[in-house]
Length: 201
Image (tube, rainbow, N blue to C red):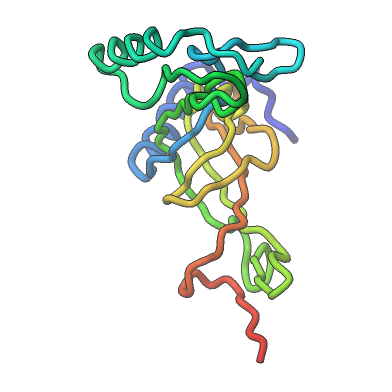
């Protein structure tokens, strides 16, 4: 007979949550989560909202561009932000009309590669034609990171680039106790990973 949430006291729920989180903290590894890139208009050229592109027209004269770039660098800025061009493709945004900045955050997670997989199940196979399967990784972490993972662009687990395959889910006793994320990668596995690489003569 199923146990209803009303029969479990708040104290027991809190104790269970604390235990789960302590386990995660003690055994976890850091995972890099890349958020959706931040997009902002190019400081060097005019942006056309209708075409979502650069108009191909510089905002500055040659002198103004040099002055602006000098001010930017003197304030600790790095990279090219101001450069005069007569017409055509902007050298700063390369004709896009906007720049993007990568936003990332490090999160402690329990990492399980190929969860529940034994033998050939959930393995990755490489052939001359390409990838036939994908390697799955399961992460467990604090529920507070739900929105971070849900809106992430990609994640790096043990230095391997991965994509989230389905929305994160909550699991645990009573209220939210642990967040489970399932992701996959198509990067080539290491030789001692137990994954299958086909040999062709």
